[in-house]
Image (cartoon, rainbow, N blue to C red; front, side, top):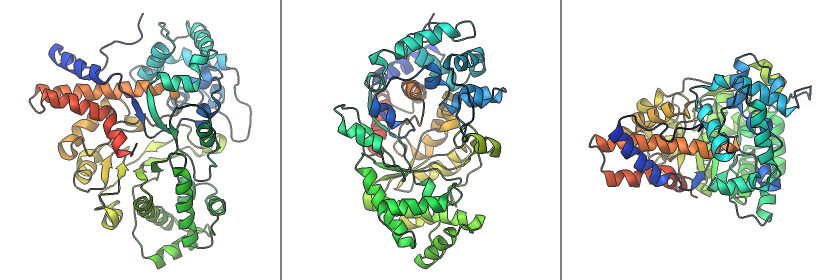
Amino acid sequence: MSLLDENRLLPVEPKLRSLARALYDSIAQAPIISPHGHTDPRWFAENAAFPDPAQLFVTPDHYVFRMLHSQGVALEDLGVPRVDGGTTEVDGRKIWRRFAERYHLFRGTPSRIWLDHAFQEVFGLDTRLSAATADHCYDHISDCLARPEFRPRALFDRFGIEVIATTESPLDDLKWHRMIQDSDWGGRVITAYRPDAVVDPDFEGFVENVEAFCALAGESAASFAGYLNAHRNRRTYFKRFGATSSDHGHPTAATRNFTRAEIEALYAKVMTGKADAAEREDFRGQMLTEMARLSLEDGLVMQIHPGALRNHSAGVLARFGRDKGYDIPTRTDYVTALKPLLDAVGMERDLTIILFTLDETSYARELAPLAGVYPCLRLGPAWWFHDSYEGMMRFRQMTTETAGFYNTVGFNDDTRAFCSIPARHDVARRVDASYLATLIATGRLGEDEGFEVVEDLAHRLARQAYRL
């Protein structure tokens, strides 16, 4: 049997479906531009075989293990490593069986479409995963992974990826990117500058991170000037490895625009480790404005990913570390939060700031009106918890009338799960084709324009916005 309906996510009404299908078919094989994500550059540097199906699909993917964990499966039993090096499951087949026995939990979720797409289109499976088929699927995928055509570089080429960006801390030496550059492989894997560890005073080890960061850049951490120069130096270093963007995962969208004397005093305070919550928020906000100014200097596109209360469970954070499925969306203000930054640089036509949100209530009320007028602003696609058919459709419906298509940046997959990349782009292309078909059928868009827009949304806007 086929795991995938060939007309999945397309409209039900026959005439509308036919139009959406034609739009989708026109871009189904378009190149994948993946300008923001969290795949591991080591995969492409070493080009080693993925170890087993569980290590590919379950253990590294918080979309998968958080669902299983929500139904009572211990993270240790899914092979998620512990901070203290304590015992976790290492038998890939046992992990896979636990996953397969609970595959029904993913019914109706975007993860189910992504996984079925990977199982069928990447590995050629035609059997739905379940407790009864667990070993068959595991053995089949394992056999594939042992073959050279399933190594990371071969899959990169097979997926039609033109460029993919990973995301690294400014403390990273980028050795895997250097190895990729020095290899004879032609795949384009670039980095992105993610300075959270040295701009967020709530990040664990912040003061020590800043001191190491400045030393790495050959600057002194004793002054704000030295600290800011360290950012300049490290951003330049990242650009040597292809970086065209920076990325900022702040808890809120708060920005500030203090005087130099105020900034220097604030920096000195946070470096004592004794700044209060308001002062720490002030520093994060000021650093967003400083990063925007640095983008005017060096041309890096700036991404702001706010609005997650990260590591909601203190126990899971202590036991397993960051990014273990316990990041929860929060209400997020943009209009007042971004005003200091926009007062400083909002009219700069050479600056691109891409805004993301986990708070959908802000789409029509705040984000689309802001991006629909400020020259520097663009809207990132439906993100994270909203990376789904419904989430993408809501995004288009609530932003297009005010911001249009050309104040958005197409699609990016923002994933750690390598094999989900073609699936995620396929979903986005089907959703956009369906949305555009409705505009055409209701007389709001010419059919010829629809075929042009769907191409823009599939890859041209991302290429342009991220300067690729």
